[in-house]
Image 1 (cartoon, rainbow, N blue to C red):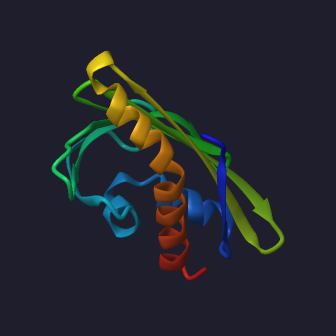
Image 2 (image 1 turned 135 degrees about the horizontal axis):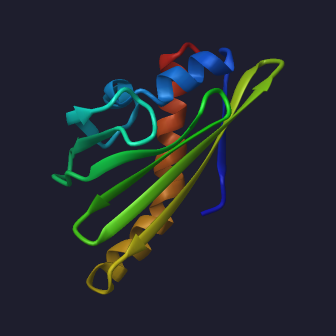
Length: 137
């Protein structure tokens, strides 16, 4: 997926703290109803389970934490693996967040993977815009 970028009008440390906190995810991720089974303190290796509106319950894991620079996670559910990487850049007006998503699937899930790869940029952009609004951007 080509990266998508969204502008935030708040400092990079505020944006990073908000987007990297699994507990805050249901506030801005449109498909997410709640999280369960949170284990860890937000560092690499922290895990939780997403409970989505469509019934998917992927196991999530933080795979990269570089405060105010980058953050990444991977989610796995029924032969689908989706990775999200966020990049953070301080700009005079606040912060620009760039996001890339990669979806890998097992053979039986290939058709669903194709659909997810096509829809992911729109969903991620919408979620980041929701987060920007929540932070007053």
